[in-house]
Length: 461
Image 1 (spheres, rainbow, N blue to C red):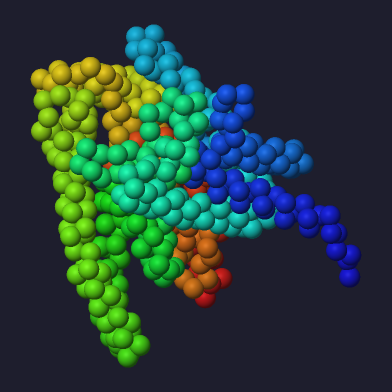
Image 2 (cartoon, one colour; image 1 turned 60 degrees about the horizontal axis):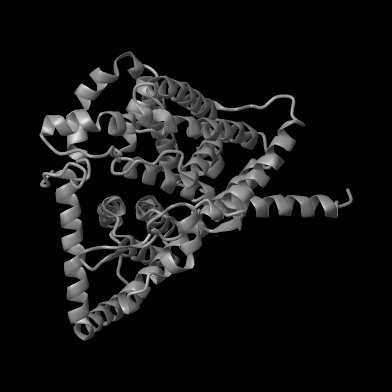
């Protein structure tokens, strides 16, 4: 027998811990270290440490087998790089597009990360460690968001704004937790933008339903109430609605029998809800009424364009879609490669045009808040088509894989992440959002780890 190398085992466990923490802190950028008047997120610290390990490891390999999915992903990032260069050219006319420059080093880092991550061994264990970190980070975000919102409703105190006041000042943020005029409070969890829970909530919801961890579904909806995210609300609602229909049809086919234990559990749950509603009915009605009014107001002003002030109307998002053909014509030949990843060129450079077409007042640029339209204008037809292609392929792969008992934690998390992205991209502008970028690399390397679905079926059967 070969002697066990204790130092090698410790090194492997140390690397896994770094990978876990990298995924964990990617969901909470406001957890940061104050250094010389600036705040450096712990995610950046652990990500750079992980990158150092990856680059060191990749130098030991003569050749890296990238695989089908990662090749498509890297090609998309390459197109994003070209589009960013186009954005720098157009910035001579539109100064707002100079922000494109800040995305070039980020794209380069993710290109190096994807290649070096694919070369790591054992890839399955590394994917598992990163996924666990992302999942636990997501859960902590929900808990913090609920605590933060509860502090506001109980004592009118924004815990996030007080705890992270130094971070807010250093980064010139007006708020992290946002009190609404209606009396509601919007928290971003351990993020500076409540809309980021719009991705984390549906992600956790779908993962919980697929793995039958229903307590996490309640935690996810607690995060939704705390953030008041319309993106999260719509996406999570769609996921639950589709799951209920599929579950109903499945149970109907199987003719599942109700046991006494299930009946008792359901009865206790229903009675408990009724008691809570009776005792706290005044507070519940008040909070629910405010929540309904907030969502109604945000939907109507953002999508239905009821305000005469263009900026206050939230864009409006529906009209950005409506005037997309005009925007495409205005971008012209740059539609081939796009005008810069992350700038949401349609929202920035064409806000004035759309505002004039609508006869609205426009005092500032506005983000389009739709990732698909942003990628279409930012990475062009080639970039958008490639991105949508490998996302749908990955969705199809994990949808099939998660039907088998042999599906791993990484498979379930990858599936939940892909679906949450596909849905939330319709309602918010996520560009190079760390949890999504890490999840994409994990999902695509996981998919590349199986030669074909037929081989996978043989293995799991």
